[in-house]
Length: 159
Image 1: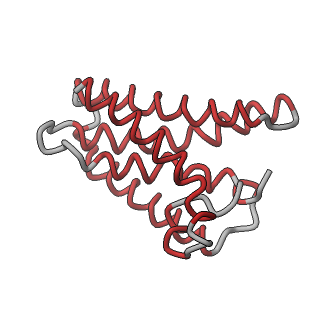
Image 2: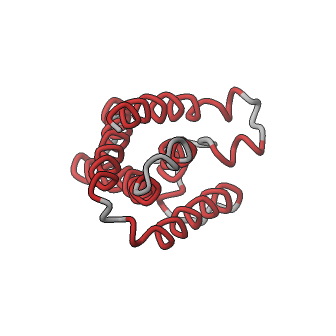
């Protein structure tokens, strides 16, 4: 389990970094844009954790019965931590700092996998598996829809 978590942190961190640039590298390919950052908004940066973690969560879940629900919960938590931490520190400072933004991403990835590890071991999220998977599915749909049709809200605007 510990190897799964460590490899997951490395995979999600690396994939998230690549997804930050992939849309631009692909000459703004529409399909790639659905899963990678298409601009510098907080919303688009949330996808950098969400989609790699979602993909990684399909690996090894059959061997560990409580891992699916733990990873679903951790994916939601890690994704939501990005705007919470970003808007908290920028609200205090009044501006953003690139190195802090990058550190927040890595902190959210590590936190998410730590939580996944803890909940996979104690199975506390397993009774909520269907609800958590439904929420993760709703997030995935929202990321795709709001990438195509972003609402006129601060979360979707480049800071």
